[in-house]
Image (cartoon, rainbow, N blue to C red):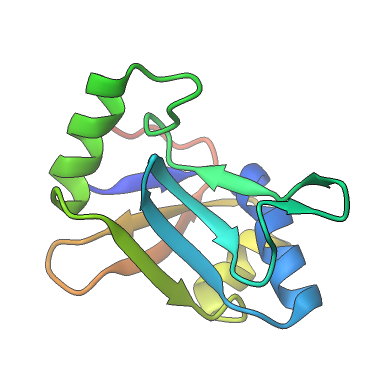
Length: 122
């Protein structure tokens, strides 16, 4: 089961990582989300941009819901994986009207842009 990240939420993460010349990191712990590796949680007096997977944000989704969804998509282990924000899949997100789909099956993790707003099952 792939996870979906909204492009509109991922763009600030990508922009910060490119500006600061650092990777973006996919984390699975307290939700499933992307953030710029070079930024502390509180950077320059404001929250660092974070982009949660749809249905995997602990601030808006019940624990059982996001936990089950994350386990189905990525397994039960914690995850911390760095990606180059200049990868072509991320360029589509940054400069186009795309969302990002993350899949762990088949292994390894893969990302691909998908048109924003298209229907999907979650």
